[in-house]
Image (spheres, rainbow, N blue to C red):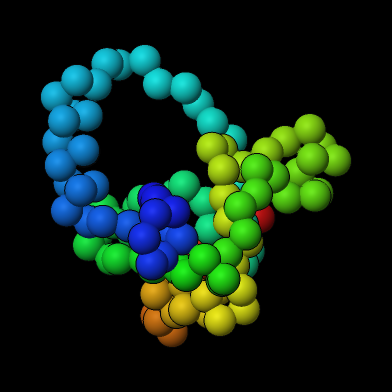
Length: 120
């Protein structure tokens, strides 16, 4: 991500592919386990690189984003956003949510409801 140019945040799918290729060639086995957090649509984290991985460009203008290291509630718990994040304007958050959300079909909802049922 960059804060240079017209956009405050911008992903580059082609750059992601090049970096990923180089990283795969140099990767070593040891990897740190990080906690998994789910953020509201108004928060964009470094995990946005996943969108670039799948060819989806993200562009957020400077007036639509504010840099943050943690949400207030995270700080109360002594936690933070991995790397950093941005608070997004309602418009930018809506655009992001429209790009990244999938829904379950009726069939998939039925399957989910059937999961975990135990016979007495």
